[in-house]
Image (cartoon, rainbow, N blue to C red; front, top):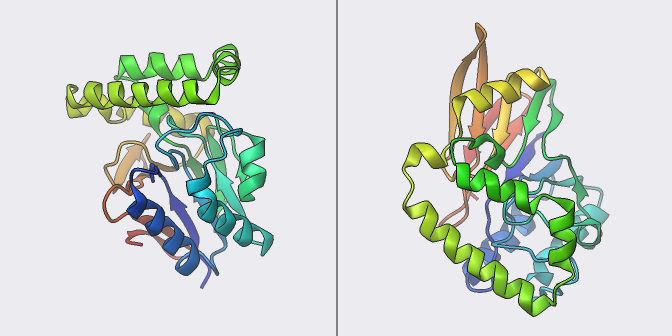
Length: 239
């Protein structure tokens, strides 16, 4: 049966080996035979540059490359934790990097895909951070630092993010309905798939008098999940 798979927010990290095992099992048992796999950001807890050997991730990289070499299209959209993924890692995994906002054809339905953090416009602190780290000059300066220094700064940023997020009300860290509507109108579509918020659901919307949908992908901190898209519809499922 034709199907396309979407995942995000795996937050792979050497301190969470069970997450790595879940992902490797998913790649080995669930992905083969699919039409394509889309990874919509935050595959890693953080990524400090393609010169990082990340040996603990090599088995997953090898499985991705094997799928790609076997003819499966693999696509990657940057998240707010892995915005430094570049062409070198993409080749290492056999993935194609996509634009931050990309429209894909899902069995005849034009669909906007993104990580989703750009939709959280009420989170002023995050939007400022996002603008900073997406700046090419900032990225060049950061990548020029020694690898150990980059890891230390990423760890510090992760701890700060956790503390900040805990102190924010839910509506601040969720997407803005106005931002969602603007993105759909801007791209001329009525279906949106994203991650980031860790609040999996399929939301039915009204967009200028027409039905629309917003699908939020699950994170993988516990059991994980995947969006399965087929010619006859789409559904969130476990892994």
